[in-house]
Length: 207
Image (cartoon, rainbow, N blue to C red; front, side, top):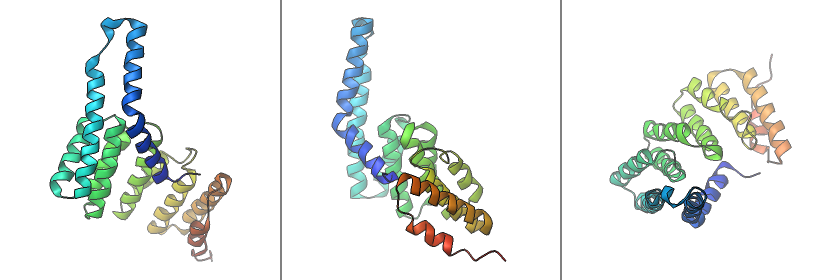
């Protein structure tokens, strides 16, 4: 079972290699089916521009600097709903969190969660919950985790994070159940359970 980071990296690699070709194929196929008058060259140009902008954003972020972060945030907002925008939002969140600006990181992930689809949306929810836990915004973290609690590939991580949140709230019984759920989901998916078992075993026995 792949981790959320591996899923994101695969999506990034796929779109870097095939994104332009997919967009071109869809636009041309649409044109052939409905007639050339519907062919929208601007759509293709827009997607190609987003691809190039995303690559520039990543390169700038690697070079660091507040200006690069601001540019990446602008791109993520302007291209909202596209795969490139979501990936850029993840980079913004990562850089902001590394710089200690959790509020900016959370804002980027909230935007990604609201506009992304599929696996990227679920990854955004998990990362958002993790940062909200760090901010001690427990209810918001639990709400984010509710979005992925029953999603295949995310059940184990969502349950483990739920346990972390409940433990932080002082709910040992709730955390114990969440960790047990995480172990069951991880075992079913063939994912290692050592870390979550350690968390479970660290909970004092109920008196």
